Figure 1 (tube, one colour):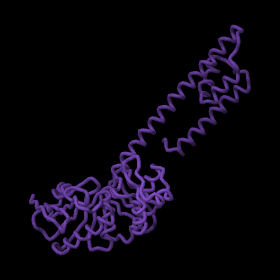
Figure 2 (tube, helix red, strand yellow):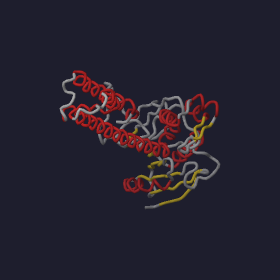
Figure 3 (cartoon, rainbow, N blue to C red):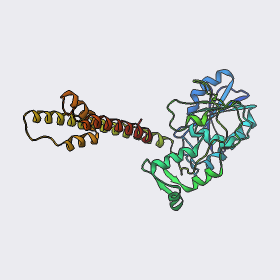
Figure 4 (cartoon, one colour):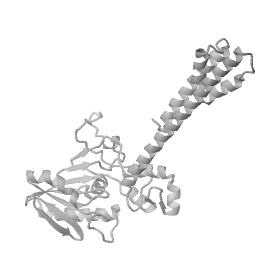
Length: 336
């Protein structure tokens, strides 16, 4: 496949494919570079399309003074599109992740035949709101300090927040297909869910999706360097913490229920020998601490306390209350 290195102004680029009147602009995501377009070009070039990959600021060979921020990237993308429209008849857009977000900012209202996005960020504000919650940073704190460095390696910036609020994603009318990953942690499925005229859900599994125009909304955003990879890493940490919490809770419940069961057995043994008994308060205490299932099982396994109404009624009531509380907590804490 024919490959040509070039520069559009100061923007490093690579052009794939034999000369043709049609071209795809490939915009990478965070951590990518212009050579990512090669795989897509291998599919597009045989169909009569050329593909242009570019390096966004702070990526690939683009190591100038510009930053990987929307106010720096958007003008560069607009420069590239103007160049393409001068040299090709038909332009299409292929973009990944935050590259799709930058493209929607840069090309709203532009003449582009169609777009193809892979795992796009279509609601940057919501994403950053989530990250601010993870970092336990309020908008007031961010406003006061200007910038805050997070534990996951990204800097929250009040300037970035203000810019995003002032530049919402509005007016995107280009026909767009989206390849949405089932485990995408950056964008909610609802944000890329199209609506049919009757208001029903237009998504079908494995089919292209069309983003809802103007879906971005929130109250905070990131500073220099949008944290796509950091957010993914933080999600992994959250999942690991969740697994550890569940494991510790399960271990505790096993221990406390085993203890309650053994306390019933010991009290039964002492009753037979007319020895000093395990206080009933201790039996109920073990049940209230999470061992109600073990205590209730011990009652019938050892035929103990089954003639005391407050045990017969109390133990299953405690168990039922604990199960209900467990279901409620699990649902509201995100453990399941």
